[in-house]
Amino acid sequence: MNRNYKSGAAREYRIMKKLEKEGWFCVRSAGSHSPIDIIAIKSGQFKFIQSKKSGYLTPQERKEKEELERKLGITIEVM
Image 1 (cartoon, rainbow, N blue to C red):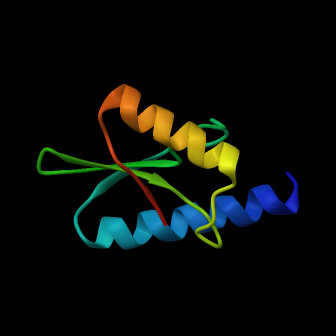
Image 2: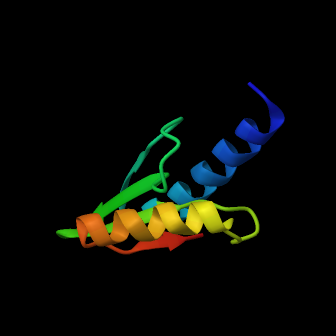
């Protein structure tokens, strides 16, 4: 595993741990290369999360995120 992958995975696990403390059930989409890294579920609610160290999305990442949001009618949070 390269260092960027390890760093990204560790960040995703930190986000999941925080959400789980708030009562969310979380599933990590490891290695999917999609705009959704984590799906969190609580009381019939869903959160779709893309984990980014800086919160910055490249223009291509932003385009992919927005296209998926439109296609599925969801909002993807960037954390």
